[in-house]
Image 1 (cartoon, rainbow, N blue to C red):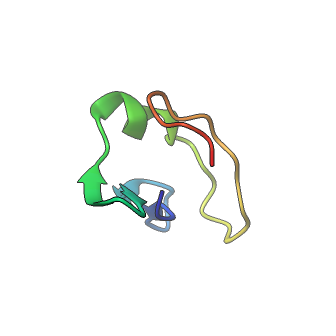
Image 2: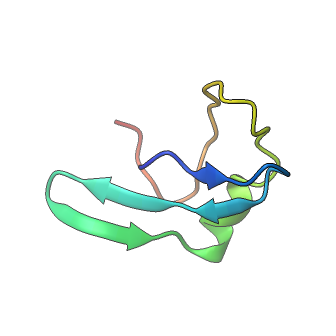
Image 3: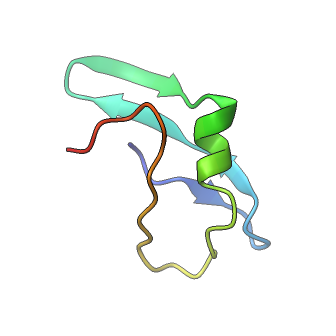
Length: 55
């Protein structure tokens, strides 16, 4: 997955899934909801996003 983009308030502005065998796909509403609340502090965060396998 590409790194989600957040605005200064932590609102998700962009996120997509990419992979070696397909172009970018937009996240579903449920997948976007799993990213809600990530602090826009510039540090890595780990979240489980439904419907995406771990790589």
